[in-house]
Picture 1 (cartoon, rainbow, N blue to C red):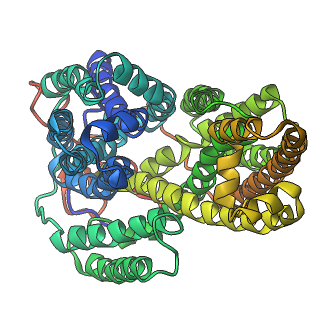
Picture 2 (picture 1 turned 135 degrees about the vertical axis):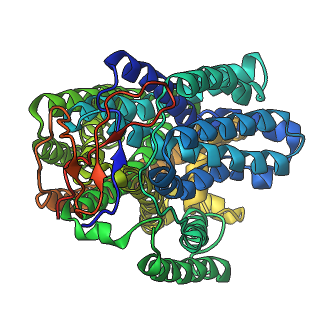
Length: 573
């Protein structure tokens, strides 16, 4: 690879100032991650006050969509113009969006302001991991990557509970206002204490065509994957049109990136085997992970009879395992300077934990299910920090933002694709296996009343706590002679239905294990470049192309003075 300019660094920055800066980064990252989960428990109250129940899912989708598509754009812009003020402005945009969300008077306004929040969240997530690459030497990055990886797990644990608490004891609007004090503290840390991270690239050209085509490709593709099989049939004209627009725009994006002087996602990145391998593994593990996580609470509710509130807490052991393993893996990588063994261990454990999950049945105890959760969480925690570290180590700092953002994009898109594909597999499997319920007495009696009890949606309703309560109340109103027989028929039906549902979920985890196995095979091809324990710049070192001189000037004299440094280890092909 050829680079025409030096990049900036503050490798000689005082350790205390680095830690203070990272406190601001962590607070901002916590805000962006929390808002992916905290709103869910407030949605029923929002609908009661604002109406618009038919647009309910957009309150969550709007944020996720906006943050996903803006991550790579912010990553590239921060490479060109420096990360400090893009990160700072991202927090400001996020806080403005939070205030507007809290002031919303109807569902349309709330969805619009969630988009604004998501744009700010994209700036935060797109730059947080890259800032670590600026602040720390390659081996030191691993510790902080593990911490930020744990933030995602922490937000998944406390987000729903915090959202429910604020909604019950204050208002659903407090779910958004709670961001303000934390956000202001983060702004103070970043604005006053983080050094300016300025790029030394002289010819700064924004790839407007690439940015526009990236958005116009990702938005329809992600919407098609999110809505297909749920809001609209996969073969409907609307979903097909979304796929057509997305694919056409993606082809246009690839053409634009090939021609652009400073492309949003340089296609030359894929010539680097570490980048290509890492992005592929990240995509596959996210697909297997999100597809599995979604159906664990559903299994707990419909098969084990756990309440909706308690089923959410079933994921807590998974997240605790994820957080602990993420931090530990970061420490191990930092101490050894090697990451390939951790990647292989995590990928292997992911396959084994999903295979183990595929064996669950209605007889699986709560303790056994929790053990499954911990194993899955540990496997995910081991793998999450690895690939960001690997790609950052494979490129110099002038590419830090774009390669880091690309891994984040791969994780988001992988999760969306995995959720859509595994959801379709689950629905088809459940529909096929449910046909065997036709011969049951309860299904035949329901058919006589015009109800298809073998319909997967009807089955899920009947297995829910609310559905069970309604049916038993109706059975209790029957004449005494018929009551016992009808109750037994319903019991036999639900027992068989639980077996079918558990089998379908197990089949889903088995598919996830296959996807994870592909990720494991790809991991075998991951090359390892030992991480440097510390940056050792040399004065007057020429950059990779030999055209520019990158000079280490030492620590900045003021908080906003950029520090020019030599390029880090050249990109490895």
